Length: 298
Image 1 (cartoon, rainbow, N blue to C red):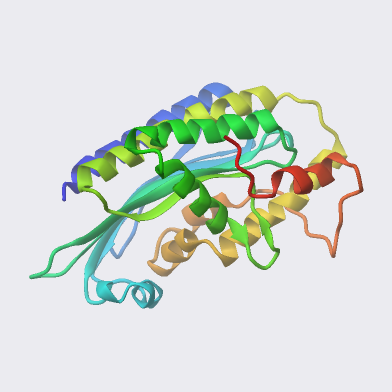
Image 2: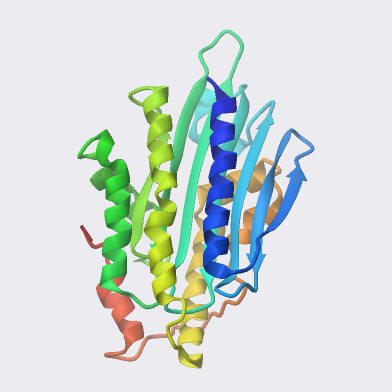
């Protein structure tokens, strides 16, 4: 497989997304290059205390090694004894304004090799939106953009990947979705390499189309301490998912990835409360009743 072509695309993708976000925020992302002693490295692009983004990161990584951790081979026994190469771009953005949603996007490629055997390879990725105060028009726009990005590959891709996203970004211990979803896919290797590569390009190149209009619309909405307090409480769900359930976080930590880059997905200000419930009829309750319900938005 031509991994150099994928790597070039991912580096350019990182640059274009960072450039687009800097235009909205007005501040510059910090570029932080890192090396992995076991093989590979990456570039983290991080903003903290921006004008719009309280914290955000757009990271590129390219790691490789002689073998995979036990957790990976337990789920995929055919990968045991193979060397591996993994690369991707992953981003999480936490705006300061509670009316502007958190967002996550990533695209990645994985390949495992063994002498005398065909390489095992696949693509994965997707994007999902996590609002604190829901707007139906934002949810529709985000999902419509995801659907448009997948439409050239067949009518079944969006509903299938949308369902996958709803099931993946679900906090089982809370029995609630993390947000309003989007699309998610993994182990993508059909019908062929070029089609799969084109699909991840379409999805990732539509990220700014999906998120930037929402961010620009909500970033200056007036808010008070009550809204910031609820935002911090809901951000706790984001932390719980990433540290308890997210496979990418686990893979990165177990393969010796850079901890600072992996955990840049965590928000800067978070709160937990014991058995908290929103007030009946409040905007906070509406998030639970109208948005965290696995709805078909388009």
